[in-house]
Image (cartoon, rainbow, N blue to C red; front, top):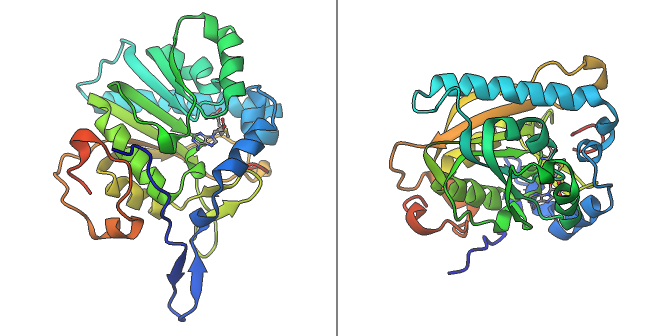
Amino acid sequence: MSETPQHQPNAEVKVNDGSTAIHADSKIDHAASINYWNSVPATPGAMLAMLGDFSWYTRIDLRGSKNFLAKVRRLIPALPRDQKLALGADCGAGVGRITEGFLSEVCEVVDIVEPVEKFTQALKESELGGRGVIGDIYNVGLEAWNPEKKYDLIWTQWCVGHLTDSQLIGFVARCRGSLNESGLMVVKENQSTDPSGKDMYDDVDSSVTRTDAKFKEIFEAAGMDVVKSEMQTGFPKQYKLLPVKIKCQTSANEHRTGASSLSEFGDSWGVSGCHEDFPSPSVHY
Ligand SMILES: C[S@@+](CC[C@H](N)C(=O)[O-])C[C@H]1O[C@@H](n2cnc3c(N)ncnc32)[C@H](O)[C@@H]1O
């Protein structure tokens, strides 16, 4: 079976006044994204665009993530509180900024998923690469990643804007199938501030910034339950950064037979095996 989800965006939708609107995700061009990321230095700072120059930014981000995960672990009794999780995945990992500053503290081993080889090469050659915490490295985009292991924690941050809506549903659905029974998937992303409530396209790196409502629709379509979400706080207001929301999902308990919203995304999500039961640079990063 073809494991690669097809890009089937409904590029045009009718709006109330009879005109048509273009879905932001229909503009995503993977080759342009990869070109962009290949053009930036393979350093932790470059992962955060211009904010990489500000070390406080990554400190606040990582602290927010640690606190969030600690709260989630208290919520879910089946999760060991004081023990490291056996296997994590850092999705859209770049040079491993998050694994280095956080995931390596909470997981024994972290697999890396990142399409840009110069980033993973830098990671392998770094001190982090020599620490024995890095597991397998997959040089693919998330739209083409088919997890073959069971993970305790899949961390996905500042990268799903490179996937179309349909690809993102497919990715989340495949992650759902690759979580251990008490496994968690966290998505930490910027939120759209578009006054008319639309996803925003950024042509610098060919990505979209989604609304909260769009994320909700996508997670539901993929059969995931959001068990906890919170806004990242602590970024100084004068930088006028996009709001960042952290969401933790677990596999939905209810058997899903096909929500009406799913048809909107086409049927080619690359959902495999047992899961077939459900159908910002500038200052963005
Ligand atoms: C803003 S950086 C974030 C890196 C890392 N998550 C962090 O927070 O430090 C965006 C990352 O997404 C990666 N990326 C680009 N296209 C992707 C795709 N289709 N799937 C997964 N990652 C992608 C880029 O190569 C880059 O490493």
